[in-house]
Image (cartoon, rainbow, N blue to C red; front, side, top):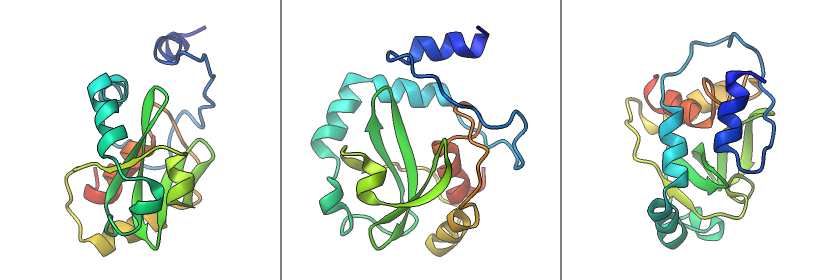
Length: 156
């Protein structure tokens, strides 16, 4: 067992083993702080805030704008994606970058807007998200859903 497995065991109470695709991503590594995502996802006050003030998938379509950086609570982490309109989100999973409904994206949890910096116009953010559909070089630490969403919005 390597260092990466030890870290996953610490942050993953269910001991689920993550499948990591490719050691060397075919796109530049997107900066981000995976530890910050984990701390945010495990903070009891932030979890409660998302449960109380987040938007249910049924209400979400009228609450979000194209290009919004969305996120939803999961067990031990938060999942991120880009809202593209018409009740759909583009997000990065272990299976690759996919277009899914808000309901599928949320996996039964409430959805919230992450106020990440935005360098591009909303239409450009959506175009950038579409341009990566089908990419499949996910890495839980270096190339994940939050980093994908940040790249779509601000290029870094």
